[in-house]
Each structure stands twice: as C-alpha cells, then as structure tokens.
Length: 383
Image 1 (cartoon, helix red, strand yellow):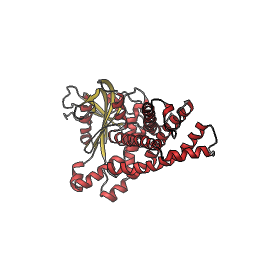
Image 2 (image 1 turned 120 degrees about the vertical axis):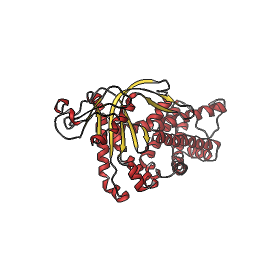
Image 3 (image 1 turned 135 degrees about the vertical axis):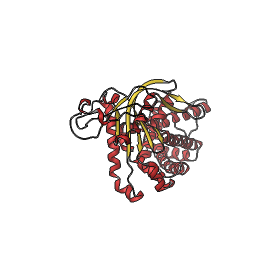
Image 4 (image 1 turned 90 degrees about the horizontal axis):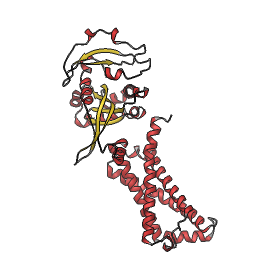
C-alpha cells in the first residue's frame, strides 16, 4: 500500500511532467509546420528522427517531474509567505537559471547522437557554438519559458483551489451532477468570538492561519478533502467506502487534535492562549456538481450537511468535543481502542424525526452499547 502522502505527491507531480511533455510536442508541431517539413529546419536545429523524438519526449517529461519535485520539496515553503507576483518572479528566475544550465548540457548530447559521433568531436562543438547564437536557441528558450510559466500557474492554482478540485474541474467529473454517499466533518474553533475580540482582527487572522496549518498533515494522512473554510470552521469530506477506510474520519479528528496539542507551547508563547475545537461527523447521500456562472465551484447539496452542522451545535450542550451520528457509527468498524458513548437523541431543526448520536472519547476499552447507556442522560431538544 502506498502511503496517502506519497500518493498525493505523485498526483501533484505527474501534471508537471504532462505539462512539459505536451508543451514540447506543441512546439515541435509548430516548428514543423512553420518550416513545411523537418528537412527545411535550420542547420542549428537537431534533426528529428524516432530516436531523437523519444529521447526529447522523455527528457521533457523528466524535466517536468524534476520541476514538480523541486517545487514541492525546496521552493514551496521558502516563498509561502510572499504574495503571488513575488513568488512567481522568484521561482521564474531560479527555474530559468537551472534550465538554462540543463539546456547547455543536453544539447551536445543530442548533437552527438544526431551526428553519430563522440561528444568530444569538434563537429559537435561547432554545432553547439552555432546553436547558441541561432534562432533555434531562442526557440528552445521560448519553449522552456512557456512550459515553466504553465507549470508555475498550475502550481499556484492547484494550491489555491486544491489539487482534487482542480482535477475534478479539468476532467469534468462533476460537470453533470451525480449522487454520492459521503462522510462530512464540521470542525469549529471553540470560543472563537471571544478570542477574536481578545486578539484583534489581524492577530486573530494570524492565529487562524497557524491553527489551520496544524491540521495539514492529519488531513493529508487520512485523505480528507477540504470542502470549505468558513471563518474559523472547516468542512472536511470523504467518499463513503463501506469498509474500514471509513474510519479515517475518526482517526483524522484525533490526529488533528494531537497535532494541535504538540504546538501548545508555541501558541501560548505567540498568542497567550491555546485554541481548541469541536466537531461533528455524519454521512449520507449528496448531489455533487459544478454550480455558478460568474464563479464556479463544486457544490455538495443534501440534508446531510445541514444535519452535521446541527450536530456540531450540540457539542457545547453535551460538553463533548466530538459527536458522531448513529447512522455513521453503525457503518464504521472501529478498532478496540475507541470507546463509543451513547449521548442520546435530539430533534434537529428542519427534521421531523429525532436523531441519535454518540461521542467517541478515544478511551481504550470495549465498545459501549446503547443499551448500557441511560437515555435520561441526554435531554431532548431542538437545535
């Protein structure tokens, strides 16, 4: 099994390789059309045959993949706090310098293959010198610049709207609305209004940014999809699988809680407080599709979202950090270290039937049954 983080990185890197490969093919076709056929191309250009085509295609795809690796591993975090324009210019300069060096190294290799001679042959280096001052060099530089700019725009857009959302838009997965079964988690910061008043708007925004950053690894590790940020609330979603992988929603909650706890001293040092959160998890059918004309987004529509939001509102009433609907608990195959506590039932606003729900306190022990809990502990209320 490939780990979720590795799988996610592969999905992020592959488009870089495709962008570079496709841009290379486009430039090859344009140059071919401009010169009618390959035999009329400039003498400084490498004549294309099957071997050169395969080599150049592999080279372009590899360069694209290397670009993706460099972007994720080395250039993302150093510039994450810069605005878009500065990030773009810094990265453009770094990548341009790198690929200029790559081009100057790879051209002699391709020339030696074309001339069927050693790379040390004087004819190879004569061609190389002619190339540096030719239109072919300019064309290659333009090709690399185009592929690089497309890659950087892809990087920024996928970072802004999310890799999964971008992929769904490009593939048209939800162009026509489809019905899905999904798990939703509504996660909300406790006492956020009081914290905002205490810190002021600017400091509160910095707190929110750091607070959400704490959840990143957990969301990636447990393959959650970020549906929306709504102020201090985050909505996560998973496609319902009907097997043990559905436990990811519970595991994700406690992983986020642990990651936040690890930074307790940092938050107290920088903001003089430690943010905490509460959440509710529920599942059901939703209609998923693209919506909007001025601004498009992928929308989930269904009663399950309203019910999850209402359940989250019950956390304070029951003095718990996590509420899970009985509908979802019945579908999960939780390991023994999770203990289920039955909380009761409540009539949620807009629903005619009362809804049952549980708390999962993450206390080792056997699963508690509803029969062992007293319904009198949980008052009936409308939220």
